[in-house]
Structure formats: structure tokens, C-alpha cells
Length: 191
Image (cartoon, rainbow, N blue to C red; front, top):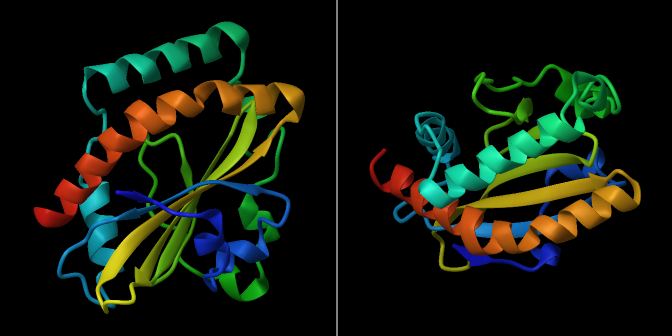
């Protein structure tokens, strides 16, 4: 896993840019996919879908604590989610993207599919703190190899959303992303 500058995401000709001008790029990462070719993005997505990501015990504990806090403080009520507090990015999609496949949703995945193309896809989640988008894209590196890129775009809900994002940053960088990276890179290698 390599952390990238947000400019690396912005410079790509992704379709997500057309719908997220009011979001900020929070995180951008590259994942190793040795031997990947230009048409392997669907293969990578299939490998990711086959995962049951719960991570190591510390990651499970963090997510369990987050969902518990969300329940106690009402952060994750349906009225605060997509279709409640915020409209889905699907409502902002350009006409030619509206017919694109949405992608597959799983009940265990809190982020819901927005669209899925041959080289990029997006999933979204909203709650009382933020509206967030996970964008995955397939990029050719200068050495000719291909890699998976993930960008996390966020639109915090006021000062509380900004404070929340600041508070969870160390957990994302030190625990969640490293665990996710190990699992995603293993998924590619064992596809």
C-alpha cells in the first residue's frame, strides 16, 4: 500500500469528479496488484467481493465500538443516511452514466453501490457525521503495470463532521487501512 497525494486522484479522468465537486479528497491509496493487466479491474472487484472483511481483532473492536457509539448517539439512523439527510450520488449522475451497472450490494457492506464501470466504481455512505464516497479505480503505472487505487471522498456534516473525521484519522491510518491493505493485496494474489 502506498499513500498518494490527493492530486494523483484529481488528475485521473474519473467520472466520479462529475458528481463530487462539493466533496474533498480525504485519502488516496495505491494497492499492489502484480501481473495485473488493463482488463483486470472486474477480476479485482470479484476478489474483493469474495472477502468477508472483518480484519484482525483490533479492527473488529474499532468497528464494533464505532457502531455502538452510532447507535447510542443516533448517528446512523436511516433519516441521516442516503435518501434521508443527503441524496444519493446516483441522483447527480450524468445521463450516460444512469444506465451503467450499479454494482453488487451486500447486506454486510455499509457502503452502497453507486456505479461500476470497466475501470472505476463508487460506493457511498451517509450518516449524521459525513457523506462519504469510496472510489476504486484501475490505473496504469509508469512502468506499465496496473494497480488498484482507492480514494475516500468526504463531505462532513458541519463542525461535528469535521471533528469526527479528525478524531478517527489516527485509527484509519494506523489500524484500519494497513489491515485492509494486507487483505486486499492478498485477495489479488489468491484470486
